[in-house]
Image 1 (cartoon, rainbow, N blue to C red):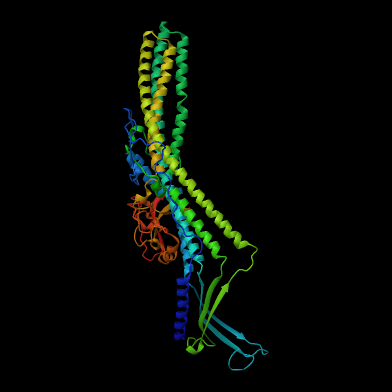
Image 2 (image 1 turned 90 degrees about the vertical axis):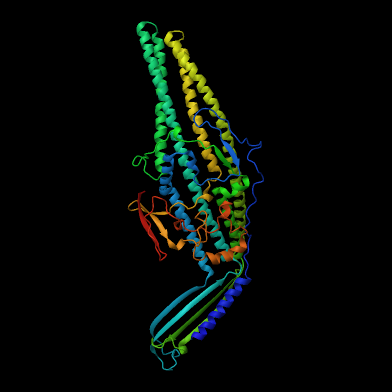
Amino acid sequence: MFDVSVKWFRVVSSLVTAALLTSCAVGPDFHEPAPPETERYTAEPTVLRTASTDAGNGQSQHFEPGRDLRADWWTLLRSPALNALMRQALANNPNLQSTIASLRAAKEAVYAQQAKFFPLVGYDFNPTRQQSAAVLSPPLSTGVSPQTFNLYTNQVQVSYTFDVWGLNRRTVESLQALADTQGFQVEAAYLTLTSSLAGAAITEASLRGQIDATNTIIALNRKMLDILRQQFNTGYASRNDVALQEAALAQEEATLPPLRKALQQNRDLIAALTGAYAGAQEPRETFKLDGLQLPTDLPVSLPSQLIEQRPDIRAAQEQLHAAGAQVGVATANMLPTFAINGNLGAMNTALGGLLLPANAFWLVGGNATQTLFDAGNLLHTLRGAQGTYEAAGWAYRNTVVGAVQNVADSLRAIQNDADALKAARDFERAAKISYDLAQQQMQTGYANILVLLTAQQTYLQAVIQVVQARAARLSDTVALYQALGGGWWNRPVPPVEKILNTDTGQAATLVDAHYAPDAPSATGWFSNGGPLQALAAVFNGKSSDKPATQTAATSPAAASPIASSPAASAPSAGSQAEASNQSGTTSVAQSGVPQ
């Protein structure tokens, strides 16, 4: 029996090997799209240095074309409060954790499809007791009819569908591309979170600056109102002068509630970004413009680098890759399929001696299937896949055009913001002189109330413009880092992946040895992970010309097509209580962070 089984498996292995060596993958092979046909973001040469002024955040900024981005670019703002909030947000933001969980699901879909590269093996043990009818031939060799007997059947069943046309390879390729798409969606969520939180901090600083400036103007107006009332009591001012100053004071006080409302709503936004409930866990950190430093040396990536750095562009590229693989899937579905199956087992009327050679049996069979008529179903499916592929190509082009526009807009905004702050500072300086002179003249009786009111309003507008211009320089600097991709390719480890117990609201750090990559990659999301990745790489190597051995120090294109689990990376500082699981099963370690 064992000699027969060895020979049988040798035959099957030879057929499988021959089919793999002679098979091909139909459909278009993926090639990376061409880079943008431009090497600049503006029609005119970019001015490498901005204007400067003596106001806060008024220093000149310098553009450095081709310079790489830091992964923790927000630390350039030199705000310990912002750094603390960033750590909290990256650990607890629900949207980021949701995209990470979706990435894990996408990778599992790849691994499930990769299993079809191997034969399906099943085992069956079937004990029965039966009686044959007298009108039938005796089923047993004794020749006595009818017969009542026991029958024990023990067998292994093997089936395998040859991937002659690359149907499974293209399916895996498509799923790998979709998993990579989700991986870049994680990076997009990470970038959106960090830039949104930095922007919210700048907005809070701007609002606090406007509130402080308004309060200063209100205090000056109250002082001036007291002087006018004294002059009215002594006959040196009219009641109309006092009423006009009272109206001006009330008008300026009316600007405070909208600013306070915006500040409170912005604080709620910061709480939500950090994964906390608004009102229940308000952030302790506060922000003012003097606590945020303007980065002076700004990187400017070339358009050819931009397509490797932007997560949305990389995601659109992988969607194009997936759509191209689906064309191959639809093509392969129109071609014949070839399968082989076999049984190897033993049968006996007694359990004892079941495995004796005399009780052995085996069967090997093949199957070829071809659709002859389906009323055009497969043909139209193929044409639909081709249309989707074309649409993905145009969507990729649109994403690249929009990304170049984002960088161009940010560069122009930074240049003009510097000029705006310089002009606002000059306006504030002149308005302050005018306001001080109007106050002095009003106190000595050489000017009427209208001159003072005009000077007050002008000075208030000037102070507010300076505050807004300072905040705009910071905000547009953040927008530039976001437009350039945020430096995710230089991040040594990905965010900690967590699972949420919806019953208790507690989060736990995920530790899963099954996803530990053979060698850590630059980003942590993209590496050689998964139980069948080595075999899949052999099959899919024919369908992609993307370089597989680039380092992140040279280009973010170092990310390879399959994403490994972020749990393979080191945890953040606040999540040290992880438990290793040597058996390869999923385990969790309580982090104690309420969600």
